Length: 280
Image (cartoon, rainbow, N blue to C red; front, side, top):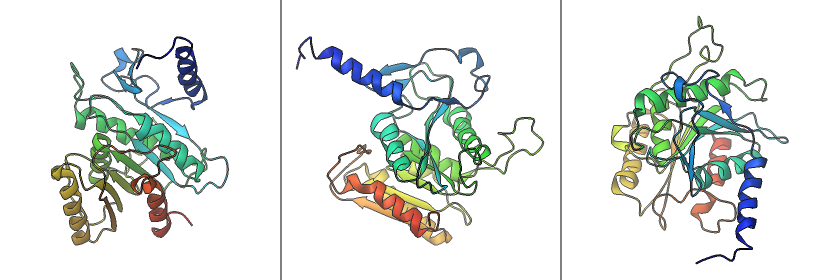
C-alpha cells in the first residue's frame, strides 16, 4: 500500500527519534576488532530495521535505573549470519529486561555469511561474543552488576554463538595489558531461543545452566534438536529448562504488546533466573 505523502515524514521522524533515544553503542575494541581495523569506520547498512556490513562490533547497554538485580544478559540476535535482526530480537527485549531490573547489552557481531564476507563464525563472530562477555564483566562494578551473574541469550544464529560461548571459554589472561582481556569469557548462564546448528552443540559436566525456548512448528533440527539437547544436559547433570510452544515456529522474537502465550516467554526466563537463585 502506498502511504500518503504527508504520512511518510512522520514515519521517518519516528525511526529517527527511536535512534536518538537509544543508548550509545560501546565498541568492543577501542582501535577496531582484530582483523577489521582498516574497516572500523565503514558505515553499516540498514534495511527494514536489520543491520549488516558490521566491521566495528559493539554492545548497546540498557542499564536499570531502579530495582536492579545485578544480573546482566548479553543479547546475540539472529539473522542467519547475513544480517542482524535488532528489532524484535534485540532492542525490544533489552528494554523489557532493563524495565524488570536486568541489565541488557545488545551485541553487534561480524557476519560470516554476508555476501562477500571474509569472516568466519568461529574466528570472528565468536571473538566478538567472548569479547562482549569480557567487557561487561570487566565493568561490572561501574554498572552495578555482579561479576558472577553475567549470562548470554541468543536467538537463531545468535543462539549458536551463545551455545558456543558456553561450550568453550577461558578465565582470562591475567598478564594482558588490556584490562578487558583479563576478565573471564565464561557466561554464568545461557539462554537459547530457537537456535540453529544444534547438532554441533556438545555438553559437559560443569557447563553453565541452560534455558531453552522454541516452537513446535520450527524446523525438526531445532524443535527436536532442543529436546535432545535438554536430555544431554540432564544426563550431564547440568540444570536446564525447556519450553516448546505448540503454536509457533521460528523467529517469533519478542515485542511489547504480544498477546500470545509464547509472547510471554521473557516472563518464563525471569522466573527461571529467580528459581536458579540468580535473582533474589
